[in-house]
Length: 448
Image (cartoon, rainbow, N blue to C red):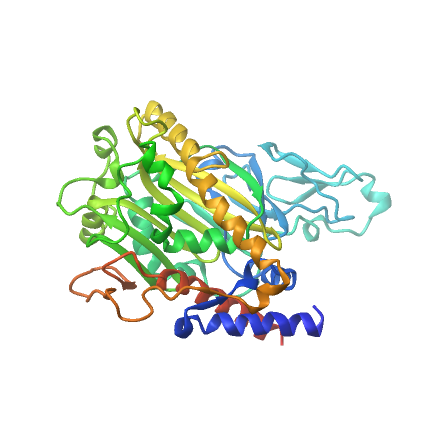
């Protein structure tokens, strides 16, 4: 990166770091080429990035191509049952060894010179080895693996940095909230079908910040969803049982709880609630999950989640699903969205089909909610691309002053983080950009 570009990036990072004081964000961050290139190196080249779910790799030999920033990796289960995240590049000339998006195979063979690797990435064959490469040791020329691969409750993450915090350290106390979804039943969550994906013209941070906690947009952006009767659960913004939860080791989320202490469990019907127990949750986690109507959040940098009950038609019954969303940057002001639908493993196949149908109808490329959100997010990227954008600051000052937002005491809320008694607080989004500024700064300092 040239000196001028680095100076531009460092100036933006410095201004973003002031958000906790000013509540102002430079509009340029939503569409800037130099910043995009720096993010690929400083964030997606170092951070723990979500790759996929263990349940997707149900049999030895199963594989999928998955992105980490602008890199493509083979997410695979080998014959021994171990999971690998391997760079999709032959060690001979660098050609992609895997051309199919997914499948099941024992080997990956390069189409150029037929170097062949088994599904654990070991080099197991190359033509005329004795004559062409008599001294080559195949053990030294297997596929490159992501330097670090770890999983949490079936969610697989990879880091392209050789060193750094472990996944456990990265997620930190945020697992206290993730557990309410991933440990809700003994069998955990299972991926339903294939993840949907689509490329769209907005910055990856727009989606990640929104899922961190932006209930303020619901009544306006998604007004049509209420008008056609697709939900009864989102309710009005604010309210005594809406909580924004920020500064959970760099991650943030929002939730809504029912007033009465009755088994809501995100709206699951009795047939699914039968499998819910408190064996894998603490009493406090169980009691919050029990009253939960909706929870959504973002694990920095780009894995978001949503647990909610919705309808696919006004006259239909609602179905509850758990959604995992990955926002992968593909260019300045451009993102490839990956969208996984999950349900409790123990749920019936009929219920899983229903949950998948509702999820795709509401949260997907053609879903009601995503079509609504894309209007705002694309508009942000379009405005940020203008030459006047360098003069513009976006306002994230909601809850910055005392106002009506109150931070709950430890004896009022048992979980970690800074917990507000309202969802009309943008501290969740300021938390996201604080993590962003830290990552952009730490990686740059490591390079110097």
